[in-house]
Each structure stands twice: as C-alpha cells, then as structure tokens.
Length: 109
Image (tube, rainbow, N blue to C red; front, side, top):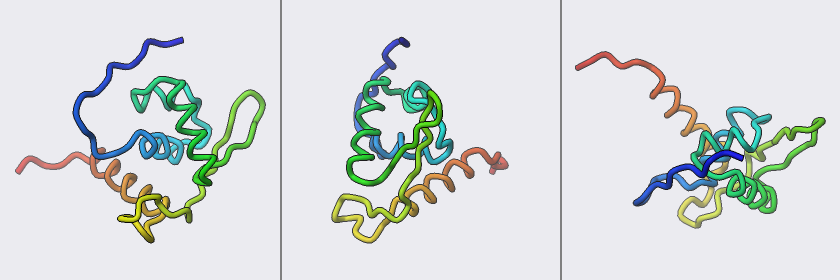
C-alpha cells in the first residue's frame, strides 16, 4: 500500500468527487490506485467517493476480469440547487477544455 498523500490546506475550487469523476471520464478503466495517485487521495477515500457516485446514479461499473470499467451517466444533473440544469456532461466538458488549454503552450506576451 502506498504512502498517504500530503494533505492540502485551505480551500479548493473542485471537490474530490469532481476530481475522481474527471479522472474516470478521461480513462474509464482507471484503477483505484491510479485515481488516488492522480487526485492525491488515499485509495480508501477514492473507494468511498466511487461508492457515493454510484449510489447517487452518476456512475456505474462493470467487472472485467480483475478490473472495473466505469460508465458515467452524462445526463445526471449536479446536486447543488445553484447548478440546477447543469449536467455531469457539461461539467466534464468544461474540465476537459481547461485541461486542453493548460496542455497547449501559450506564447509569451
């Protein structure tokens, strides 16, 4: 078992649930260990988050041998009333656009 990632102090813009969902969207066959490393969480925390997401209908999984393949339910609305009408698909599109822009080198101004 790996070491516990260093904790972050202060607030952040994204929840751990959003981070885990974004990693799964990028690679639906991600292992819990890899998701945990990418999100800087413990494997146990990722297991709990995946359970939460499955329980509330945002995610499902299919067993493939010794691994899982995850399926995101893109039409599921976000939970907070302030995001009424915003779906998981919309959130993931925004995050993917951000990742693409971050990966593109920008000329110095």
